[in-house]
Length: 294
Image 1 (cartoon, rainbow, N blue to C red):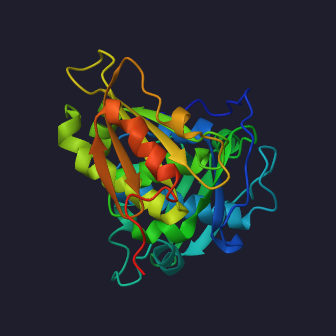
Image 2: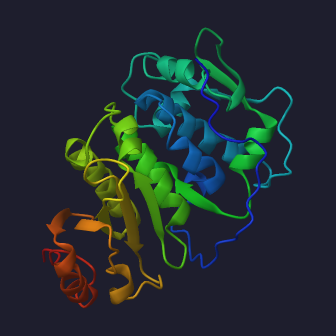
């Protein structure tokens, strides 16, 4: 079965600005557009598929002469030792390519790449993105800079999906993104899941990205009528230099049923009526639920 995940060659129309310093080492930096990330969040792909996709995106960005939608790929694509790709993903201890092989099988079911194969007795990997797809990945209107040094920390599909969503918005003025519980069900292998079935995995995934980027997340759990109960998750990210006010980041809607505040060390659940008071306190104490240990 093929999963056509996005409209290749699409372009964005609404720039998002307000980016600050990247805080990412040059060799670890790679780029993805929101036009690519957001449709990918609805694609059923395994952990190994996500791992390999991020490793290939990182290596491609490091090999390209420029990050532009007009850049031309080498006709024969790209090559890298499998050991180098495993090292990027924190899989150095693996014997052989037992994690890469299923990732290849996953990605071959999408329209992302037109070449993806082992070579030299499975010691190297060759790949090439579809030209229209690479243009979408590198779209310059709305994009995020990602940090490959984080990839070795992730152990679930949700970790990778949340990392991508966080990365493409985290440097905006008022960083936020929204996803549906049904998407989270796809990430966790539970398509019919309720929020209670996926909440632990999703909260931990948000915490991992907050820990890596030094963020605090204010999460609004909403019931908009798509499912019985919580069906939509709104994530607002507080960062140094961002423009969220305490009242703005804590503002709930008529759909909000409960809230979660997540920082690099943990999380706390709070009723929507109590969120403004909690956020007001956090804004005065460095946006951490607990003070750092001396």
